[in-house]
Image (cartoon, rainbow, N blue to C red; front, side, top):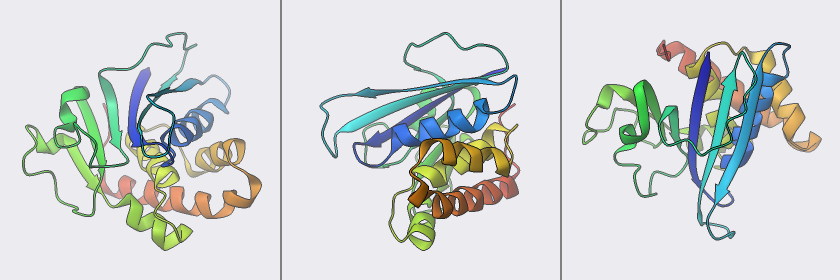
Length: 187
C-alpha cells in the first residue's frame, strides 16, 4: 500500500509542517514508512508552496514531486488550480479544500471527489488563529485510513514545539473525528 498526498499552500501556512506531521504520525509505528518534503518557489511568506507526503507499508525511496495524488489538499483556496482540484487526483482520489462553504464545488468536473472543509474556522475556534495545517493533517489521516488518534498525537509531538502540542492535538483530533463521520475513504 502506497498513498501519495499533495499539499498546496502559501509560505507561512504550514503546508510542510502538515506534511511532516502526517508522515511522522504514520512512520512512528513499526512496519510503516513515510517521506515528507517541500517544494518552494521564492522563499517568502505568502509565496506558493507545495509539500508532499508518501506513506507506505514498505520503504519509500521515491523523492520526486507528486503530480497525481490520492489526496490533494488546498490550504489556501485562492491559489491557482484550487477551483479544479480534481485535475491532480489519481483515479479514486479525493481533494480536500479549506473553504467556508461545506458543499461540494459547484464548478468542479467531479464534485463527488472534492470535500470542502472549513479547516481555518476550526483552527480559529481551537487554536485562536486560523492556521489550519494540523486541522488538515487530522482530516487527511481520516481520509487515508490506517491512522488512529494516538498516531496523530505522536506525529504532532514529534514535529511541533512542546508549547504548541496540546492545542494542535485537539485541533487535529476534532478534524479526524469529523471527517471519519463523513465515512469517505480512499480505496
